[in-house]
Length: 164
Image (cartoon, rainbow, N blue to C red):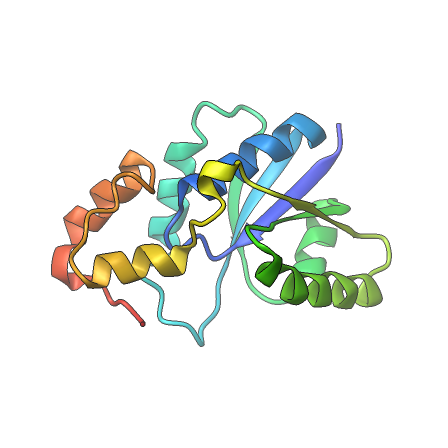
C-alpha cells in the first residue's frame, strides 16, 4: 500500500481538510497527516493542540497517522518513506502557489510526486483563514469544523491569538 503525506498547518482543521483526508485514503491506503511547524506564523492553536484535534478526528481512520515536522517537506517525506505528497485545491487561486511548490519539491527530490485533490463542492470555499476571521469576529464556526475543533475554540474563548 502506498504511503502518502498530507501536510499543512491545519490551523484550524476544517471539514474540507477531513474530506481531503478521506479522499486520499481511498487512493493511497496509508496516510500521514503532518502538521507543519512554522516559527514565523502566529497560529490559532499550538502544534500539540492541532495534533490532538487531528488524532481525535482520525480516530476511526485506521490507516491514518498524525505527526508534525519542521524543515523541508521533501526531507520529512523521505525520512518517512513516502513518495507522495497530497495537496488540497479549493479553487483556481490555490493552484498557482501549489503548482510552484510542487515543481520546487520535484526539483529538490525527483522521487517524490505531488497529487492534487479537490474537496467536495460543499467544502470548496472553506479555508482556515476564513474560520479564523469568523472566530475573530465572534461568529459561530460549528458548521465548518469538526466538533473537537469547535470545542477547542470555545475552550480558548478570547485567549485565541487570531492574525487577520
